[in-house]
Image (cartoon, rainbow, N blue to C red; front, side):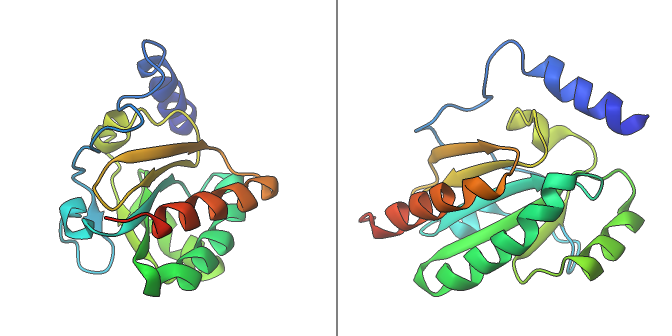
Length: 165
C-alpha cells in the first residue's frame, strides 16, 4: 500500500510541471547515501563525466529489466568518462541486498527513502533516469524502461561522450 502512496505522491507533485529541472539546466544536489559506505552522494564529484542517474526500486518490474542493461552500459563506457549512479527509493533497506543478489551491478548505488531527492527531480515513474553531461547539465530524461529503449539510450550516451568539454 505504501508503494502506491509513494507513486501517487510523486505523480501529484509533478502535475504542476513536467520536470523539476529543465533540459539544459544544472542538476540539483541529492542527499542520497552510498550503499558501500553510507557516505553522502556528491554529484559534483562526477563533474567532467557523463552520468546516467537512475531512480529505481526493488518492487519495480521495469527496474529489474533495466539493471543488466545499465550494468553493461556502465562497463562498456566507464573508461571513456561515463558513470551510472543508481538511487534506490525503497523504504526498507533490507529489500535492497536480495534484489542486488539477483541483479548484481558494478556501478555506484545509493539509497534515498525520504523522497527529497526524487522530488527534486520530479520522479514520476519507476525507473526515472536523467542523463547528465560533463558540465552537470541535464540533457535527457527517460521514464520507465523497455527493451526498445536500449538503442536510444546508448546513442545518447555515445553522443555526450563525444562532445567536447
